[in-house]
Image (cartoon, rainbow, N blue to C red; front, side, top):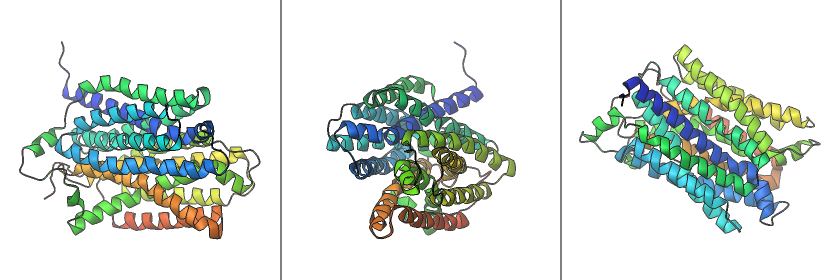
Length: 407
């Protein structure tokens, strides 16, 4: 049998990581698309579709928050490939379990364990690719992984329109299990193997907090990603409620909004990654895309009486600008040493994802006094202000040599 060259092994690793993230985001967004139909099937209606939907989404995000910590630590202690296997097995089985729920508590448990599995896929994949690729082209690897990955919800959207909600969950789980067969060809990172031989602490979560400069890097990394999940978790997922508040005549469909958003984020992901390579700068490109996201969100929340088609068009534009998620993930891996890189890369995006819990709680709290749209706008102002401060303080990482450890 012909032995693979190093370049071929790296290419296979990036392909497998990209497909893993494809299935990850596919499964992650299934609930957003199936929220209303699945809850109606369980006997819920009216405001329950929003309140119970938020409750279930929070359980999913809580699972992702805990899973990010768990898989991140395991990634630095056991290896990146170990996590790639474990996460996809757990979230595949979790998605299949979603297909057999008969009550809200069962649904909440299924979403929690699915979220627990979904938490580690992208962090491990980006970490592995970042350590395998040369520093001059590292951004292209992350761009391919995230760019291919975010196509997943487009496929999920078509499936949600064509199949019963229970069959959609089963299909998502089976896709994940099929991907496990490809994982056998993935090799571990040489940087990780070298760090494992050194007498340094690996995967100690508290190391992100016990040094002021390292803690600042970590908090700023998280802060830069907040608008992505505010936009997705509030503006996109709750499009039916926002459309009603804006006076849009035709009822908006969450699956259509999600598909529109992910068409945009796919294009924006490739564009932001390429631009960062051209300009050799992560922060400037991220700042431009964050500004574009803020402007688009402001336009959406003030667009009274627009048509459904115009709303979906604005969602696509918002998705394009939040495509800087590619750079967010790249930067998260580049900020930290090999003995802490998987922990940071897995926990940072999941803290961002879990921020949707705070977003929805704040919207619910302020909604009574100010109304739905003004409460969403208040959360948006808070979110983008924190992101601007984070970008200001975050160190630039383009071209950084990643062969170092945190002491």
